[in-house]
Image 1 (cartoon, helix red, strand yellow):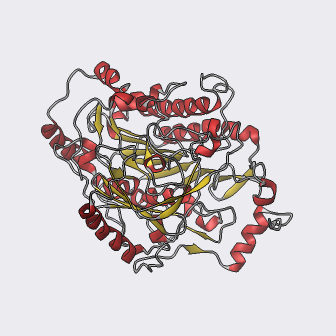
Image 2 (cartoon, rainbow, N blue to C red):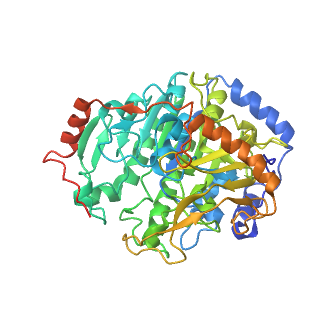
Image 3 (cartoon, rainbow, N blue to C red):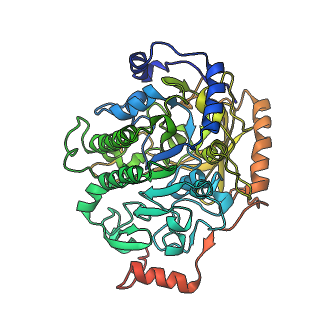
Length: 517
């Protein structure tokens, strides 16, 4: 894949970063010397580095100041970019909640582990405890580990975060719209939304709580940093915003030109600032890596309550760039070069192996899909993505696309789109239409917005990419072609007794019968 840029500016459509960089530094030192220093310092420190991952929900590529956001400001995210590195081609492993989170936390394509789509409340499956999570990688090296936010990988107590390597957990077990107030028949679809600490349900979440979750997660994270400042720590902070239903606390509600969605992003940006301030207050700047990104693109059908994919095509639930390409910034003063931009493709599955190497931890015993991308993080000259290709699955193990370098091949499938119509208003979604996608080829180097299909003029490139398609089908299968993967591993599956126990806990008055259309 293409070398990573060592430049300090990006496309003119997203030039807000340039003046911030100039304010922060007037020159950059030679990357070759810098890279050697980073490797020796990062891996040779007596105390291993702290790591904080802030992971938002349905935030689009364009929902960040340095990426061109309008109607609100994100000064703390912009600061992260000025003091760190902006990634302009950072991908979610799938364009949907549970699948993308699986990729981040295990370094695996989620369908390899039997996780597809977004798990529902009371799901019979979840992330298998036999798999190794990022938290377990850190814990094995003596780290204090914590998670504050949305889990979405199984809601039975045996599948909650504290059984996957986190010392402490506070948050909701799945998306915030999976509650009785969902605009599309929520009372008959979803149980009350629980607020959980470790494995104990504290109470049922109401609207007042929804407004405070971002603040509560932030306070918990700041407190954890303070309590563990003298030992290495790992914090995973997956906000459930800006996924619908969107809520902002009183101090942010009504404060931006854009309206409620802008208020929500402003509060998330404030949260980032609080984390950075805590790290600075305790003198941990030079020993803490902070990563900010999102799980998938914006849920465009929600219109005024949805984000922006910027200039990219479509959004969440599709493998077009708007569904997969995420906002991403990383900051580690003295290690990651300040005010730089990486425009080489990378994916959330690559974080686990990269961080494992950073802290001297062994990789999981079972096969993972991610690879070490440390050279991209620190801007080594000529650094390239180590993957031959990325595979993009969606729905129930459907292979929708592969990408090698900046060549992307879409495979025949059905996709959702608004078809040029506007999204909904005030939390009520518009209806999608179904479009048929053919065998389509795009050169993202010159056409990142996927406007010109080159399939007819580049049959040789299609043949090259089909080699990766066949490898994906051999390993992971493809339900569209009925290919059976040879390397699939099972998710955790509840016993009948466990599932009945979970159902009774979620719906104490009995689970409503599904209404037939």
